[in-house]
Length: 323
Image (tube, rainbow, N blue to C red; front, top):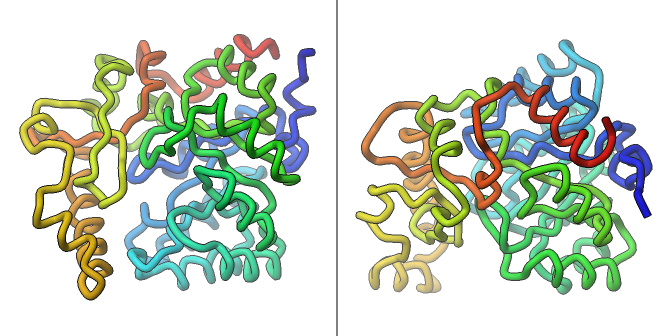
């Protein structure tokens, strides 16, 4: 049975026309992408870490609200590698963003503070055990990160993960990973998803602030060129298999593995690895360099050109059956 886009749980929860979150992507997501997504009837989120200071984050939130009315979110890394977490959370609550997306840690404190401020919390999960924990903590929805996701992917396919979560959890399940067109959005919704989080196809958008080389790579490469690396953040992360990635390899060496498991040193080593990896991504994202480490997911298979988000969204809606 065809479910109208406005009747999907995510659409009703956020009062949007199309149940899509333009996923928060490190370095890529920006104000322009959020505004374009809202204008297209969807929503979007930005990683808090895309801003160097909490005041820059506060300014961005205010500028978006001044430019357009509509829901948007901020993604928070809630583990110890994010030294700005508590301040970022405070700003998001004070400015009353519509929702927060938590990643890589316990969302307990985030949920408590956010709900006091009237802010919804969606939590990234990769399995049933963690999903049930965050539901118990009061999460408003779970983002089911499957093995086809860009960035930090999960271990299960959507065909395994969505039915498990729908069976065990009562809150909405937003599927993340493996969606690159409107037909696949329809497939996910038909499979039981209550909304979609998708990012990689929007890297090749006019609004994205990254280099033309990064955008063009999403056009030129395909799903078969996506590999998993642990060298960027310590956690498995998907990147385009450029010549430089092939040169440096995708697995930690013996010393890196030892330090990441050492009880006394792992906290600091993981923070260092995260910082170094993010600096590497930053250099590649905004300038032409042979050190090309570009994050993306398999859904770049569907990217054929660099276009404005309005065009991308219009095509997604048409394929979904909402034209």
